[in-house]
Image (cartoon, rainbow, N blue to C red; front, side):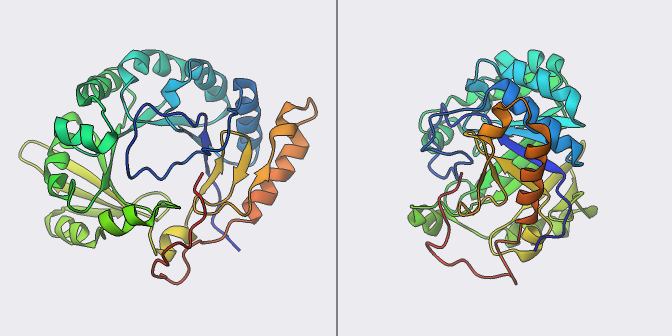
Length: 315
């Protein structure tokens, strides 16, 4: 049983992506050919808000591949306290201003490397200049505090953490160092590239002037003095971490309309697609949310070590 209050809803709006990152844990359903319509997403957010869920994060795939993404944000932003979005940044320059005007609060930008050739290799051909342009446009549009998501990959980009801190500091962004999660069906990627973030944490702790926790108590946040400013670094280290799991405040919605209590499980999904299409949706959908929240429990218990192949297909 999970007793931590659910305050955040992550809605996957598309399975499509314009990059091919080899480490991607795929917060979407690759078997699905359906994506929720704006009205359906709006109804889901309306019901979630009635239950005290006051933050919505739009995810994918790559959300900016939807040509109605501005419409989606415009429809849901009046219904909740904050709407944010995770993007690879490739298309962000084109959308930043319109998204802000539609009610988007801030963005997280996935950036695994600052080196153009390495970025291309990691992402399967991505153009890092488009990402930098997108980040600059987002800051200009005040989609802040902007967060840089850096998944740390052993032997690939673990030597860039200091440079990424400097870059994030220089643009006033928060750097999230993210531990690689297991990829279902491809344990080789995890075995080859996973590394614990404890070493980085020890280094940050020795340099920091302030160490605190995020608002759920899951993540350590370090404030590091730099020559002209301060770097803010957040550690996202969930693998085998029962404290991280037990304080999870998120509920997910898949792009084909299913409530997903846990990122790492697929055996307890609750379909809500027919309900959100019905004109008498509100109370029945509310009951499904309550059911899904009651099903939440820590995936990692008692700081278990990872069991290879133990994780279902992540969506």
